[in-house]
Length: 134
Image 1: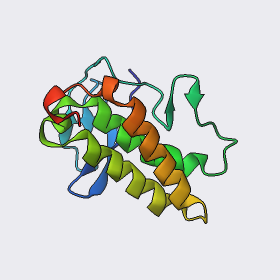
Image 2 (image 1 turned 120 degrees about the vertical axis):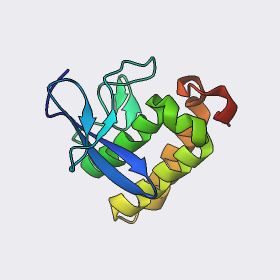
Image 3 (image 1 turned 30 degrees about the vertical axis):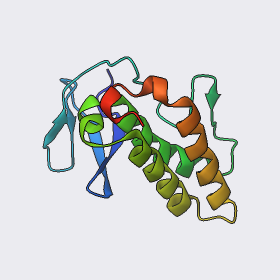
Image 4 (image 1 turned 135 degrees about the vertical axis):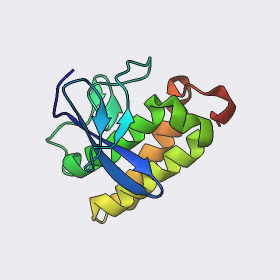
């Protein structure tokens, strides 16, 4: 647990920045608590595009913007409360949208489409709520 650590979540078609406090609570800019300390099976402590050794590193041209979009997507995949009210398809489509908007490059559409397809193909095992795992 690292106080001051940042995470980004999707909420009502926008992105909210959360910061971990000394007790492990996740708070927004108004000091509102959004999440308690937890360690779910699918939480990837290294938020960003990819999983494990297949992470995009800083040498990739769009790495910073891509990892910001992927951090929101990682949160969707690790939060059962999100998954109860939203489907995996919606989360993967939102990732595609965030990449297209954030990459600002000629290849952003292809990059966004590729990451959505990778999420569709390999993400089912990480989605914890079976009823919305489509």
